[in-house]
Each structure stands twice: as C-alpha cells, then as structure tokens.
Image (cartoon, rainbow, N blue to C red; front, side, top):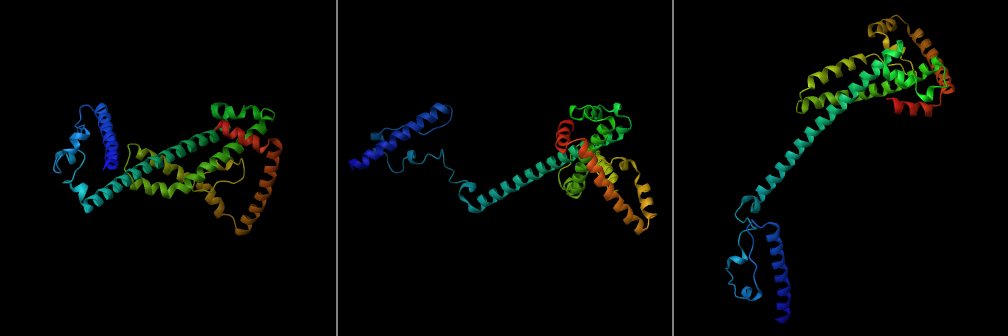
Length: 260
C-alpha cells in the first residue's frame, strides 16, 4: 500500500503542476481543480472530479460514431484536393505568363536585329565585355546564337505544355486575366506552326511568313528537298565551326545567363 501510495503522490503532484500551468497560461478558461492527497482519498466513485466533461465529448457524434469520423476524414481529404487543384491552376497560369513574356521579349529582340540601337536589351548583349574582342559582325552572330537558343527553349516548352495547360485552364477556377492570357498564348502557338530552324543563330528564317514557307515547300520535289537537307547539314556544321572559333561555348552560356 505504501509503495502504491508513493506512486500516487507522484502522479498527483504532476497533475496539480499541470493544472497550475494551464491556469497561468489561460486564466479565463475553465479548468480542473487542484486537489490534495487527503481530499483525493475521500472522493466517492461518482464524484464529478473523475469526469467533469471539460475535456471529453462523449455525447458528440464526431467523437464516438465511426461512420461520422470516416465522413469527416473524407470531407477533409476532398477539401485538401480542391485546394491543391486550385493551387495547381495558379502555378500553371504563372508558368504560362512567364513563357508568354519570355517569348514576347525574345521576339522583340529578334525583330530588333535590323536596328540594334533601338533595343536596349540587344544593345546590352552586343556591348557585353565577353564579346568586345569580336568584330561587329562577330558580335551580331554570337548574339543571334544566344537569342536563337533561348527562343528555341521557350518555344519548345510552350509546344510541350500546350495540351496540358489548355486542359488545366478549363478544369480549374478561372481568374480575371484568363482571356488575355489565352489570347496571347494562342497567338504565339499559331506562330509556332511552322517548324523553327535548328541551325544555331538562324533567326532570319523566323521572319518568313508561314504561307510563304508552305508555298515554297509545295513547289519543291522530293529530290530537291533531299538536296537542300544535305546542303543545310553541311552549312550547319560550317556555321558551328565558325562560331566556335569566334567565341567559346562556355562564354556564350555565361553571357546568355547574364543577358536574358
């Protein structure tokens, strides 16, 4: 009995300490009473001390009914799923806006090669310290390689994302600028219907109208097409070699990271 009483004393002291800490933290809230060992020994089995209902909800369905608890968990999972879907919609729109802005900026730089001084971004690239050792023609060629690579990367991303993004736009909650975003995205996707040149720095072909390109292809025979492919492969290799002599690829990568 004495051994059990000693253990009960320890538990009671810890209980009283926790009650006092609770009162100090939440003085205005209801709390269990502090009780001494002697008073505890005098309590009857049905004394409210043993079950004051302050921290139990024995009559609430959500606390005792298994089906209600399961329904609450399913509802919480559904709400989390709805929130995740909404956030995915935000992220998709953010990615699309980034791609549209990058596409537009790079397209403006490409169009500015006819008069580089009118485009501050292109002027910054041409005047970058890495390219100062090159001739003016060399700087323009190197800049075309950088802009072409960046434009190809953004355009390829848009082509890969297109179906996925369009589906998510339809399946997620709309936002205020969806119409503007969809219009800009669709216009850029239409401009990508004509395959882009894979030759590094070949941005001149981007100025050709799609119908003109299609007409030229229809007027060529298969033999002529094959001949042009061989010539383009040879020109492509020569072009790469010339650029490698003008500026190291690592320098081009560094310049692209700084300028774009």
